[in-house]
Image (cartoon, rainbow, N blue to C red; front, side, top):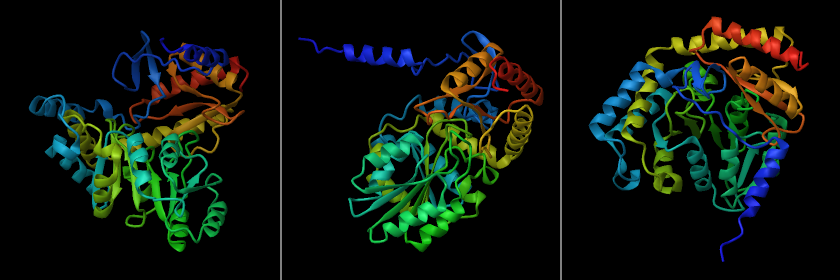
Length: 392
């Protein structure tokens, strides 16, 4: 007898009734500042492509050339026969850019967190200490461990110190934090976290997916605070500001060797296609040689944030190109997103359970590729839509 699978439909229908089901729009062009989506041209404010490198000619050409030379795929996992010279070249450039000894590329940022975190602790005598607003991929990685867990209030250094004091007898202590928090756009006080970690003999793990290409002249949060050599595990992503795809682990040679030999998500995943590896290397080279992309990103960010606030919108605690427009109730965020889509502006409604009840928001993300004229078009649309739904 075939198993009864009706529970799937019932669960989906329940999500639909609450307006919590995902129904992603279809992108019909490159992810650029202006895109074709569902048959309509829109201004994109909902992508992680902060530096607009996805369509940079040097990045695109590097991918084309590598695909022609090496083919569409690598044919194996890295650990057996799938390590190309392109992978090693990309890692070398990444390490140089990050100003660390070594780097290792994973299939994604998610795979980095899920595969690496469980290798860093061994059992209940170890403790993982995590910020309460850390990304879901960190939470999933922590769940795969047998370590004790402790959570501290978001960016609260007094709370972190209390947790460290309460776990002073643990064997290994691992503090994990996002660098830039993806829902609010605020920055972890990594300098203070590092000082506390060193006082308590704890390891530091930072997920800087939204800080790379953004902070520290593009090098990320470790460079932003001048902490090179003091942060043990720096995790990142090529799929955001760097405009390609893949996860990054940067640190010492010992860290790379450890991850390469123990991280199941690296050992058991097919390696990056040649075109992707070449594009990863090219994206960092572009970032190093063309710093104006970062400057343009911050010019757009500062202008847009200032103008949104002047219109009466609440942008929360944002201090990065992730700029939320706080709405409170989920239905208000959903309505604002829908109204803006009608005006040709793509933004995402972030609602419960992705964020806490009454903390719904529309999340905007700046890009170096958006023109000032388009930003003004977006701001006018926000003003009209905000007034229509009674948010301002």
